[in-house]
Image: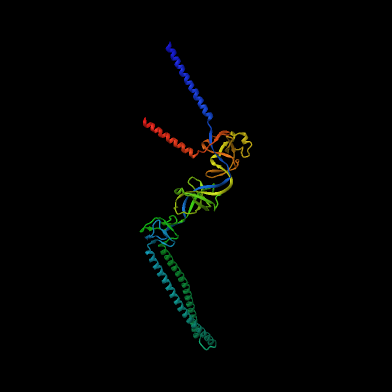
Length: 463
């Protein structure tokens, strides 16, 4: 019986202790919850400068970049340059085999010279025929006079009809000879015109072959650097056609003037103007920031693989571009507008809140709130230890800040973080300002932590 009573007393005692522990724990939790405060970071609103930018991806390439191709098909016999070589305008880059063209030139020149000689022969023949025609004309005139005399004698019956007929026949013969000689000279003169045209064609053929021969020596069209070399001595280069661009032997680029060719989205193209300033970031040199200026905007779009439209925008890279090379990926921030003495806040402090969960004194009295919208932008102001929701009218944003057109004034304390707290922050919630830690106190705490760690290590070693 005593055993049973003892067991009951022990069990009752254990239950009591357990209940007591639970009550203490509950009280402790409740006490902790009651004492918890939300710490937030604040920023005092002050007028400042706000720059509206548009970002776009792009590629760095030289402004002057020339692909050197052959205008005649021939074998490369000399290639005196290599990639990386600096060249001046007019420097010899390539020599092609010119033997076939030299033969064609000699043939064309011989044909032209023969044509010239033929023209001279024809001119001499015309002169001879003209002189002969003059002799025929003199004989014809003499015969006409004789005909008149014979006609007079025939009328007076001083000559026979047979003599007169013979004189007339001779006159008709001389007239025919004169007409034939005149027509021959006229035909020769026309033939001389044809031969002159043939001579011009021969001259054109000579010029054509000479020009083709000049293409066998290719010079640099600009001052620059050999950025690409695609052929070797002995290779046969081909000329381009409508469907085939031909052999690009090498590429010369002026690396002293670099451009960023950006792909500007169609939603932003209307805000970009020629002459606007830009900041260019190149991943290969991320620590550097390059200045630029918009020089040209395409008038027609290019369709991407995703179906969106983009407009090619050319931006001149200013300053020292010696480290930039062709083909580098980059992105650009184009300055489209600059506002001075305006209110701006960190973009993460601007939150979307449903209109129906905000207090009526905020939504009903504010001309900023659009009752037709489900959500409105708000910021939380710090007033008397509480977070007060304030509807705002926002403007454009840059990478870090948003322009506030209405709803916040100079001197207001805006809650700007941490973002995890901002996400769940409610109107009228109790908050405290985050205090900055003093560097000296942090150093003391770090030293104390190091000392404690050393003591713990020594204690573990002893054990």
